[in-house]
Image 1: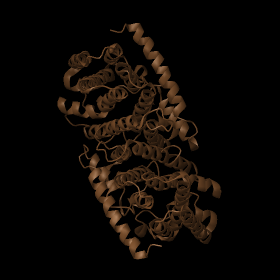
Image 2: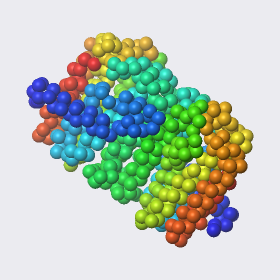
Image 3: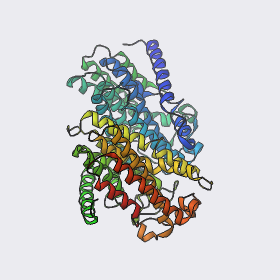
Length: 297
Length: 297
């Protein structure tokens, strides 16, 4: 296993690389302040979990570096746009994100809506560069994975289920199904897009896919735990929102101890899937799972 | 030139084909009513001008039919999503579109936001099918064109300029620059995506690009004329909005007669560009330009 300090160092280096790439690719030049709103939504914030999953999986499969950085930034742009739209008054109506005012508070609702829309287009644009840095076949595979994960049968679909579930008594299978779409699809796609940059055979792909799904579920269970155990200042976003909105969560279904045990179980599944992949260099992916499981914000 | 009745027949056939393709590709299966909202936003409405431009340009260059239909539907999905978001209360706050209640009136704001988001993802997804019907190189070209036309340096950027121009005295160059992005980019991309399905050399591409830009400008000038000369029932959307919102238009800048003369001038440019392309079969593209120029809604 990767030593703790090694992982912390790797993470910091990759986070800086991702930040620099996003800084270069999300231009301030877009007219009428749109570029500023887009940059505000994307830069200087977040754990960059999704990009890190892409990059670590690329390392594990020995994939194409330049394609992986584009894929890493593309998934982060999709994630960033979803937060912008999710925070809007007609959705979660949240005013705090990553410790800063949300985009619509800072730039107005209309600009927030457009910034989110433009970020989604940019995400796909990043995957189809005209400079020959990504092969056409790989571009197409990455676009297909991203479109599926972001769209109606992925993230957007999960958000629709989430909206419809306010005040409804979902059981655990239904709650899991919702999160598999809402947050799980993009996390799993991050892993699979990293895998696509190399040549993973079917059994390796399957193992990585289970890893991504298990990590995605662990992420959400921990999110629900943090929502009730941690204050807004630490989270950088409004704590206690789910209970306040009468939304079903793993904590409301299983209690705190039950949810923690379930998170651990999901992490175990992630580790087991990695071990079964037969890939020689999966230390960083193991460490990423632990980081997801034991994070405090 | 294509005889009027031939064009009307061609248009009806292609509109039916586009409707059938959209009906198949925009699934009702998306969870929690999201699929229904997406279909409501897309099906059974609109002139399908953008798809018709893709398909007519494909005919002119002898391009790939299956790729062209995917491109046609992809641009229409981008257009449809932009209308859904544009109609929302934080943007134009419009309640009528294509003679029906707008998506947010029918399904709520949150669902409208998500439906628009999911339609954009689906648009890119259509361009990267897994069934081998579009070559990887062509998929990439189409995705790149669509991402550019839809994003911050295209449609979304133009909408941001539009937002910022309320109550501002734009001169004609500034107004044109705004519309070149807001509506022109996607109309021009429709032509160029149609061209990309075949093999157009540089001079043909340039001619088609000028055609697309001129037609796009004509479209907007006529839109501004119709906004003041036509009632809401005929338009299928709220008439007189621009003046009510104190938005600059070609009519407010040039008067009705001046705007009509300018629309004719743009159409002449479109026809001249086509003639200069040297392509043998451009009758339908000529007829589409006339249709744009002389439409009544």
